[in-house]
Image 1 (cartoon, helix red, strand yellow):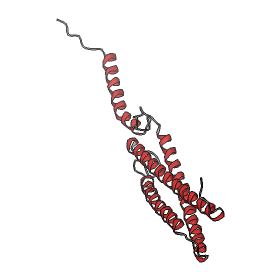
Image 2: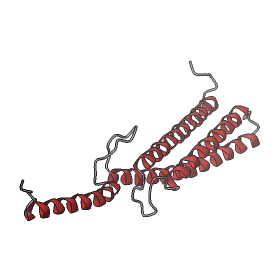
Image 3: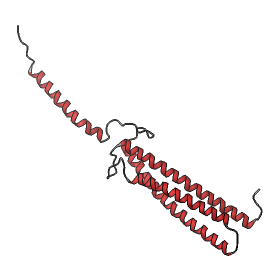
Image 4: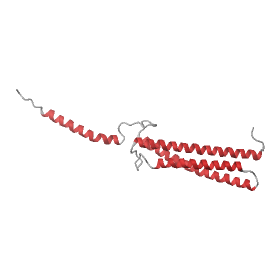
Length: 184
């Protein structure tokens, strides 16, 4: 019986295939970690690329800063309304309804500010993001973006509602001052 040994070509190709597989196994996890592999879906956002997550984070920071400017305007509006009430008190008018409206407005602004601060804590702690702004963990970054957006949206709606209520109170005051008859 004759013993058949594999040829040199087969042995060399076999070892080169093993080396190629070993290189792929060591390189593949780093490629997937950098976000160039298949994208895992984020609940509530879908399969968005990391660049989109970074862009969304920058948009939330911009929205936070814009909302901060709105709070400054709301505080100025509250001060002007308080000055208007003081002027009415000096003329001897009944201002209890306007004082209640201002107190409600200030309470809503304070509640809205607290929600806004929670959103700021969520946005600026960079949970799921690296300090350079890149994505560290897709799922955590996506969830922090969703939480920040929800808090900013809720603060926005409460702020807008408080301003609308104050405007309605001011309109009623003007109507009562100019026309003492109530609305039909």
